[in-house]
Amino acid sequence: MTLQKPNQAENEPSSYYQRVHRGVKNERIFRILLNNPEGTLTRYKIAKLAQAQQIQVGLLLRDFEKSHLVRKTLVTNPKDLLMKWSRLRVKYESQSYMLNDILSLLKRTELKYALTTYQAETLVNHYLFPSRIDLYIGVNDFDHWHDLLVKEGALVGGGNVRLRWYDDHVFYNSFFVNDYRIVSIPQLIVDLIREGGVTVQAATMMIEKYRDLLQLNRSSLHEFVGPFEADR
Image 1 (cartoon, rainbow, N blue to C red):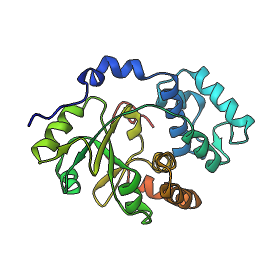
Image 2 (image 1 turned 120 degrees about the vertical axis):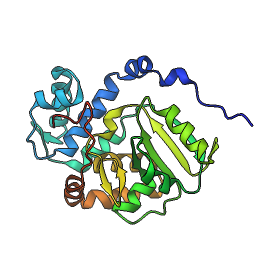
Image 3 (image 1 turned 90 degrees about the vertical axis):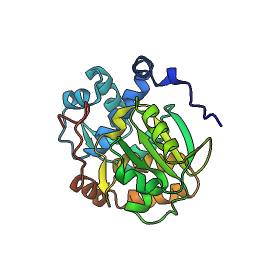
């Protein structure tokens, strides 16, 4: 039986950088603000972390101020800012697999990943049943992940594991719980809202204890230093 991979051209670096358009950079700005809600970052610093132009940051912040979501770079209404971010749609690539012992594999692999949605929420909020394992991988790492999963006996095309990739900035402020790497708390909440259904209830619960969860996030930051994380 021959296993088919998604279009490999979509995984080339040139294709990735073509997709880093305004919407993706807006997502980065949301992510940075909500991970640093105290207002300690300057517009210049946010632009540098997002690899965006200062004018883009300024225009977005002006829109947020008009909606009473921020004051300069201080987040005054994290709930509504998270909801606004969740309505920003950015297309990502994905591939599904069936593999029973994916969690054991995650503890063994050296490949970069970060859990999100069901399994990640279970680890930090303990509300959802982890019916599916969603994880972000590096933009150019799909072939490595595919080969690893198939070698471990995974079946391709549906199942309990879904790989996602579109922008490595998604790893910003990711952290560890029980030796598993998880996306940052703001990213997790937004992914849960976007998933819909019962996951929205879990996101609402997490928003209610947002500050406490941010402290958990910060106390368990991962050691990886990438292009978006070297100078926070």
